[in-house]
Image (cartoon, rainbow, N blue to C red; front, side):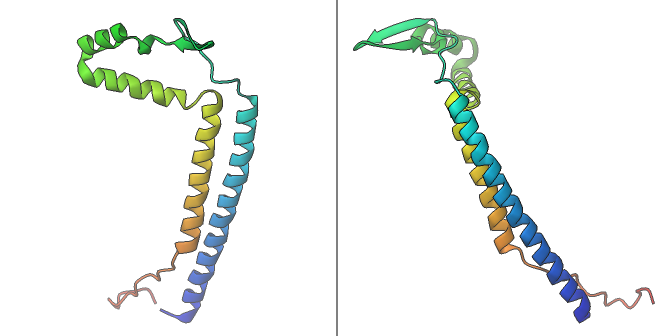
Length: 139
């Protein structure tokens, strides 16, 4: 391997590092703007789908369909304990994409993605291609 291709590889690695670093900064900046927009535009976490309200110490709390024991019992009879756990997981995951929880979800995703870009740009190493020792290369 000649010195020229090693320098070209190192230059390409440096360019890729800069590109990954810029991508991380861009993802973080756009993520912060998206978080701010989602947080301030979101209504308080809504009570859509509430069956009614329970008042405790002067404060109203929504009664959701999944909060009743009879609902959980019916779910367990139909599909077992796994069905109840899957329904709870599905409700939790769907809740991440509404209201102010969306802002926190976006923040987590953007910070995680930008940290991944920063990590990759920091730990990227140039590995030269192996030399062809077969002697059957092109002249």
